[in-house]
Length: 304
Image (tube, rainbow, N blue to C red; front, side, top):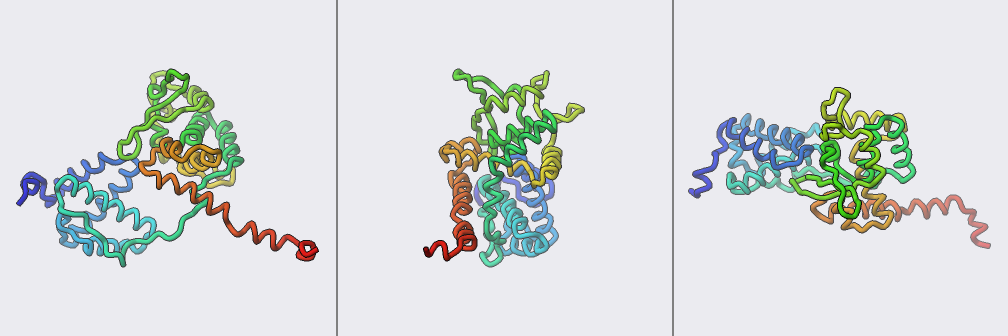
């Protein structure tokens, strides 16, 4: 028996599991935390109901749980498996389990294809319409939309902004230090047009910018719902991540370097940022434009 086995909790009691799950979740970003928490607890509930010791669970044990998720979409099943894998990877790194259970290839949830249009986000004209609508909606909505469009922040990062986070550097730039996924820290520039909108809702106490009328912090669900309602009036399906996708795609389309965009978005890997380049390229290279010419051009004119 190793020293890790002696000192580590044995994953036998509910109390031990709750404590370990809480510690693991504390290492994740807020948005990831909420989803993965439910995923891990669903798996643990299944394991105990089936008499499976989570510490010694195998890939086939996890496959049995995945089989109970058949009513969910493939993307949801894949996300739940990812949550459980993340939990086991953390347990392994902490010396609490020997390995991460690997699902048999035949039962791994498969999410086919990629919605390039969703990844590209809005066109520049639609982005202008959204920004104009936000300005008409309220100072708070104007500030949020401007932040998301010009910095590409995740919604939880934007809502966490405080007046104290903004500072002016030696070059006159206004910047903010953001703590993103995996507790990775990055600095983003807040352009003047966004600073102006943030100044319009600047709290006197120097705290969070985005608050309700009662002074409570505006939460993610409320912000998403408000953005969705505004989008519905515009005939668009709007949510915060669409604005983040738009920020990335429009920056790349206007010649910003992919590494610069990666740093702005806080991606840990350049591969993640490259998805935006591939998505735009896939749409631009579509045969649809060539086929359009075929059905709209009179062959007799071409042959002359």
